Image (cartoon, rainbow, N blue to C red):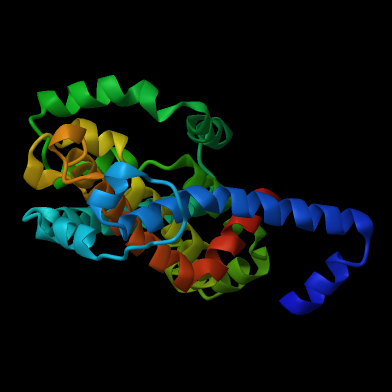
Length: 283
């Protein structure tokens, strides 16, 4: 069903029309702050000092973005974010797929209890474990390193849950046929299950990368050396003292600059992200 056909069907009934209008209204309301940030990023600081009102970028300037790029450590922050997000995504996919296959297809002692313990991790706020994590990595002298930025974030119960649910839905006949050919669990996992799970892995990978790129709290706690800042922490540091910042236009440009890779990623892979949200809601 095409989007046009779906839209026509939704606008036939009054209740559907109300829901559609309310959805559009909330979407516009949600977009207003981001549009306001985008517009201010293209206005001169001298104009913004007098007034920040208005949704037209007039007078127009790119000076705010040039100021952000001129900061010598910005390329380093971007590289740190890319390394952390990519490494975390790969590790989460490996661990979640292997754990999901084990919970869905293998038999081992205490499997139900272990699965419940893993899923129970969804109910623990990440802020609760910050102090023990910070103390542990401080004792190991591992702060201000990529290891400290990545390792605590690769345990994702939602990833294990999604992959477990996916592997459970794979017909058992495929696995039984492979066993008749004397295939091992490793062969079944790598040759049959992983190729079938590419859509789920793509969705999980996209969400993990988005979360890793936008993560702020743990990098802020773990990385105290400016060279180890991620882009979110680094750009936020230039607005730590508003009196010393380059101006509100530069602050807004830094926010746009940090969000640009994620927006681009969403535009390219929006179909998989929407499918992932639908899959998460349906499980």
